[in-house]
Length: 123
Length: 214
Image (tube, rainbow over the protein chains, first blue to last red):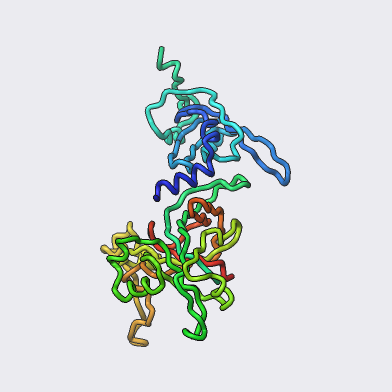
């Protein structure tokens, strides 16, 4: 009963179409998150581009963290994966990483903070 | 002030129409059966007796004989819980004995008060029970007093510990009410009620849900 009821509520709220729209991105991928920002009664799209450093499960409540360097300051944003505020999620590039969580990037800067692209790995 | 009896199922997150994510508790409210009436003439007050979660044969086997007699007299089946809700006389007569009240009594957007028995923590220390801070962990002078309470009183005056001094002891399994929780959604076909925020008690715990008093 418990699991059924929770699944029912989550499926009613997050439709399978919404789930299907989210691309299969991985930790280490560079993504562009088109998020809807409402200012007063106007709505516009803001793009947040950066590296996915964490994916957190939890069905309807799953989230992911995107890190980018903005004017030499590291900025991280946590998005709920199935949020209706996310208009579109684009994968810009993929990399080969050996960790599930890339928190070590926080201590690195510039050239050191680069990730190996998945193409390099294949070569 | 009619209410309903429900069971806590668990928590999850739902996205509202405004795009915000809300934490919600799912409460299962199977149709409550009107078990009996309390009338001013007979009992000195008016109330509705509601029964929830029919138990079937098992319930009849487990019920005490006086309760079993009560079931028989009213022509009712064994239920897990029977509770009373104080209502006006006209509302008592509006619900015939044996009829059912469903979760549709609550509407989306309303506020409700949810009563339940909080989780049991056993004999708990002052950290957990009263949010005290204890002694410093890095200090060499605090010899194994890290999670202890400090002083409990003064000197010869008053020479005793004041009543209600916060001390370690049993914590939890108290009846608690959380007021003004918003009804996020009502799923009538599955007998589910979604309220914003947390409610007291463990999963499968019995809850009483009433319209908000404030």
